[in-house]
Length: 342
Ligand code: PHE
Image (tube, rainbow, N blue to C red; front, side, top):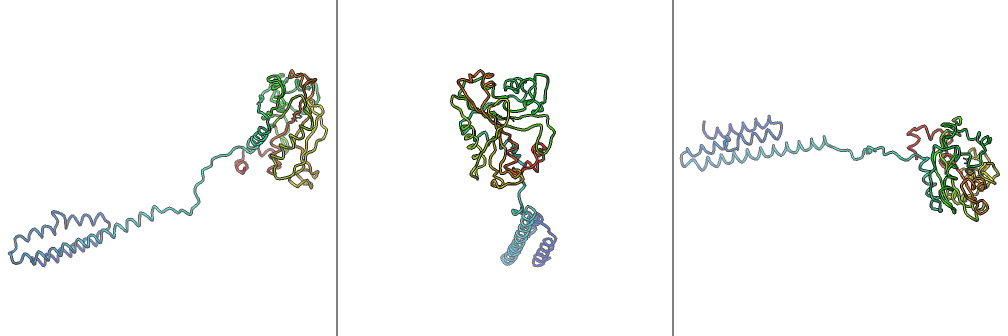
């Protein structure tokens, strides 16, 4: 085979082998096979030394040209495959940044506890300190010390869960009053937030478990006007978007005298009358009054020297008013669709 033929066959061989290459790795193998140290083109170059002297420069030039061509071809093929492979990788790893992200559910505080905390923050800002009474309470602190006689009909109002004859689940946060009086001398300005329990038929309006905040202030010169002003300021801060009006109606609780229910003007309808305020323009929000002298005495405080006011309001009721919720049972059903809204 003369040298020209060898060159042509080699060239054809490279072309046909390249044609059946399917990836960059294949091209790299070809590069080694033809252009490597022991490659076919390289050995052809080596074989030139056996040629007659005068042929060497010409043939050498031809083989070098061949080498250059093959190199170019292989490099071009390599570049093409590399680009194809990159494009394929980019396509397979493509991220659609316009897709919405996956949100992790982080949970949130229960709407009732949230509002409870908000109310506590407001009242602390108004100078009250926080005390917690026990959920499991003696008959004494829940009733007797609060001027409920043993057979007092008011006890029936409370539908109490008794654990035994002496112990019960507190029916209101008022159980904290005498405990605090026993523990600290006046002046006392305390709120007592917490859970309350009543053995009631569960309905849209009442439940066996709910939350209250008790507030009381005992000092030498405490009046009903202080009580009403404090409640008015508090509710104005809790429902800030309206000029808030407040009113009181006489009511009975054994541990206050006089006792009353406190209403605020209905902010749902602007006091025009709506189903929420039962078309009265007013919303009942708290029981309140001046602490009964007998209760002060139970707490070791001289009613001749000191006076006090007290109030208690329910948090669920406030949450229902604020968010327009018409069924108290929703708070305890643990339906995440309901709870996640807040
Ligand atoms: N403890 C009463 C209730 O649960 C509310 C109240 C508290 C009333 C303090 C007067 C004074 O209904």
